[in-house]
Length: 386
Image (cartoon, rainbow, N blue to C red; front, side, top):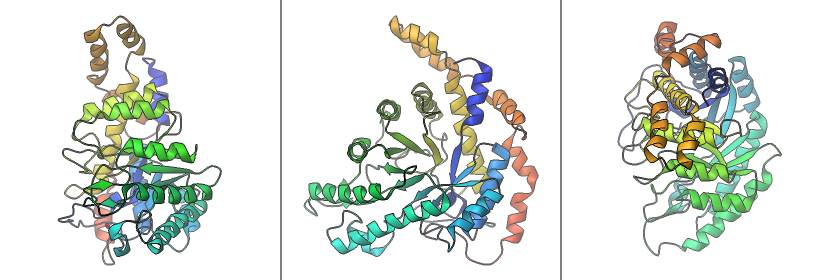
């Protein structure tokens, strides 16, 4: 695809969802460094998200995490978002932080714990009804740490039963996104450890069940773009959780560790029709030592740059080289697109959207960072678990 107007149109139509929890204090299991001006409520998280959308033009939705973003009136929260030019996005469940879930949630050997977890998942669908959200994001920390701790196959049966109950509760226009993670905090056997397990469950459930690919949830050397290509081919790729990793689930800014990998992933998205098939592009990151809002802005820009380069791949030339077995020629087509400086193109796209060409400069000039530090004094800052 080398038609510049078409490339611009595709870039303008792409949307990147930002996560509410990224605006709060988050970090590692060892330490969370609090920052001044951090939101104290879901509403203040939306205020910050509105700033990201204002300077990027492509971040119109915000994912919520329950119970971290619990409010009395979700309809009112949706209206609050709408007044700021936003919509509420995916509802993320939480069945990992309660003491009851030490041995699992929906796969726990105790039926009472499983009922508690399922009740929460169904509550999240109720919240989706109130917010108008399309997607329910499910990630399970369930698993075992020691051989013999529990029956591996029985845990899959329990998982399937819970997913089936949630699937039946979904509305006509709602989806279930099943995320996988190959280890942590379960170190011997994680109950949803890979894309194949997630795919198998989603395939059995039906078309409203899709796989979510978190780019940090893979073993070193995993070819993530292969997974993306295959899931797109099977119409089972529902969403991305974008972040970067050097070693494991680092939750660093997307594109920070390996921007070439992000480009390769986005090329498969473009080639497989993922830009127009309802795939959700979501960030799932924590910002512990860097300023939060600028880090989110930069992450959105990184996704845009990778997408722009993917759109610039000369697919006709690539197909010709592939048919002819021209190994170096085919690789060169991809590298030519990757090595293109797309920043001027994206500056034009932003100006055509009616915003400044440089989102980082626009945010610095807005005075928002200074304002929230001055105004958000007192109360309890939002963070992991709050």
